[in-house]
Length: 389
Image (cartoon, rainbow, N blue to C red; front, side):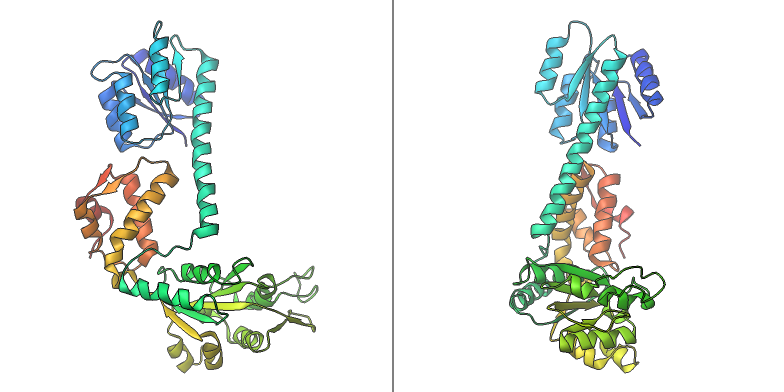
């Protein structure tokens, strides 16, 4: 849904624009003067703003300056009357995307609207691509300065250059995958693949095929040979996430692969040598799982040469403001929303939240806050939207 805000003191112009734009399937919002328009801009999210230059109370150029001052990145198209071309050019210099003249020319209007919206979408897509690139080349930055996170960072620095297997433990949403990726990127294998397998998300009857691959005809749907994740990660790192949910039969085969550095595809007989560093993670107490015969003790010791525990967010409350500000900047850019800020009391209030969902929950709440709140996010907003306990 594309939202367009029309700000014009002439009702007839607003009605004309609304009729044309709604026919083109845009959603149209209206403001009858600059002050009302500014309030709507502060509280709403629009894909395009169309603003008359000559208006009472707050004219279009003054409004444009205020829009630029608060950092709204929505394109603004100015509407100019006869004899206002010079003023319209001034508006372009002040940051307007374009202008259209009265009386409105239908073709000119629609072309300008489409171009403005296309530019906004292009800017957002470019940001997303840059973010993806940053995640590839340096997106494993672990945010935080608490003692628990400092220990994690120190462990990563020590173990990354080796080929030692690492077992990463911690609750859901604490950032175990981020730790695994950081180890890979700081290792000598960083130029080779990082392959992740979520053992909890793959049915037990398919996990062996996913890990070790299969030969054509091994089962009904095996219409061709397929490499498994051990082969795909050759020379790099294989990350077995939620290893505690892996079936015992698959555990036995993983153990053999770790012991011999060889795998056999499902339905195959040929042994295939593999050169892979294995990292694993779990939110379960594997010692307890071993006592209940749900996890192999020998595999536990093979995987856990190095143990890294990632603390929960409730164990690192001093990192909450740092993480909140990091997500705030990141998500404002992603959504094309003007930069917002937390006041001091809001950041303190965030530390009072019981973070059962850890960092993932914090990110979701920050996203909720930037969409629903004004430019400065207050403690009252936190109490309303973050459900502190």
